Image (cartoon, rainbow, N blue to C red; front, side):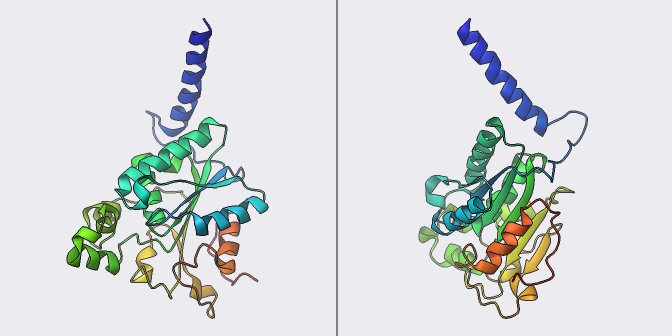
Length: 249
């Protein structure tokens, strides 16, 4: 009897999660923008958590529950598998009672977030998404690696080459209407070339130097730069996500 009760309880919880994400009669209501949930931070290529952990601590100081997810295969394997791992993290938060999730994807982590939205109907549970220097249309360095030294260019590297099948699939898929998404990049990016590969149709797209002309921020500094951090905190706060027009003080 106890076992039956436990199984029934689990099925109820899973039923609630599934019901929020799928319906036979059309799209579900988007997450309540006034009720921020857990913030999940998705690392870039290589899976290092160091820089994002600093941003997660800053979010925690601001009163948010934030955690950096761990990517499989050291963050260099199939980006689709990484999206599956993100889904597992999202499911854990929803099952634990989070009303929704906010995602922050750094570099290739933003591509993982984009894949997750498509593969798991992510717009039904993602309140907001912020990407930092994400090569959503690829980066030349990956293209060079795939062409010149393929043995030293793991699967994620090859998938980030401009024109890859994975990126073409993303380009062919529209961003779900009503999903607040902010894409930030720096014109000083030395890793994602061209830097505006981070531009995403349907998102709020911002080159940092458009609002902070004197800013000098490298690709690796995006998650820890004070100006970028201020923009991230504002974008995942309770107020509507709008295009920033002024450089944070």
